[in-house]
Length: 133
Image 1 (cartoon, helix red, strand yellow):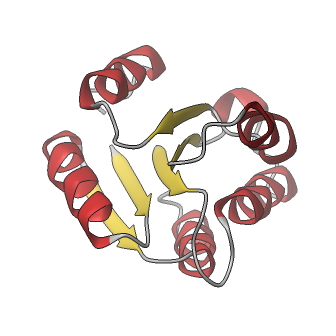
Image 2 (cartoon, rainbow, N blue to C red):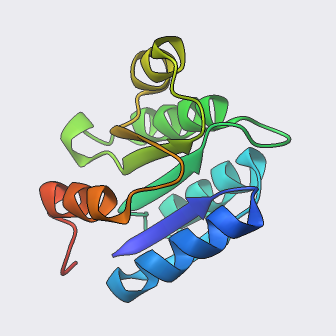
């Protein structure tokens, strides 16, 4: 499984990378622009990510705008909706407005609030059928 972690907070980034690395190859970015660039490069190289953990509040480009750019690239590349990369928004924001924006404006697959419950994340990976990829 190919994983992209987009997180500006060092501790959160390190914990996610430590937790996810046994399940696949992890690339790490520290802002939304880097996340979009990494995603585009992976698609262009024919090695797209299976999972993106995307923080909502990041410098340069927030997670919602980054997710929109990612979904636009998939649409422009002819990726069917059932083949889209699984995107889990990771954030301290848990208001209904923020959650709705992530799902409906951004197109995320799931939404987890920090601190990340690793068992919930593991259950999501199982549900997506990503373990063993």
